Amino acid sequence: MLMITTTAMLAIILSAAIMILTTLISKKMNEDREKSSPFECGFDPKNSARLPFSSRFFLIAVIFMIFDVEIALLLPMPITMMTSNMKSWMTISVVFLLILIVGLYHEWNQGSLEWSN
Image (spheres, rainbow, N blue to C red):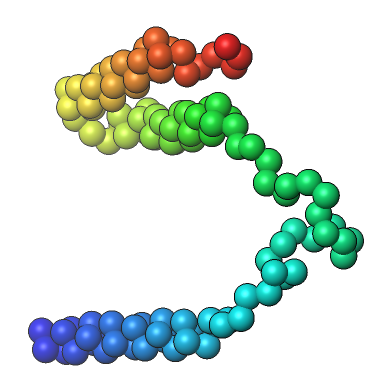
């Protein structure tokens, strides 16, 4: 037990020392206006380099990521059916699919799945 504690403390101290050292080494104290501005062939920018961010695109991207994770969770279900208790597998699968359907209905009801308004 003492060896595990000593090893854990050594790992924490070593990690903290490396993080502090890299923070001290990597900090740049001077900020140059030219270096922080967007690059346009050496000239001052004519327009703002920041384009307005579409919150609609962000919402669709988040919904896509949620559905992507749901698919990753659904794919192993048939494989686990063979190795688990059928009653518990069916209960868990039905509850999981019910949560997904309720979430889909809520997003559809809120109008999040429409491409244009």
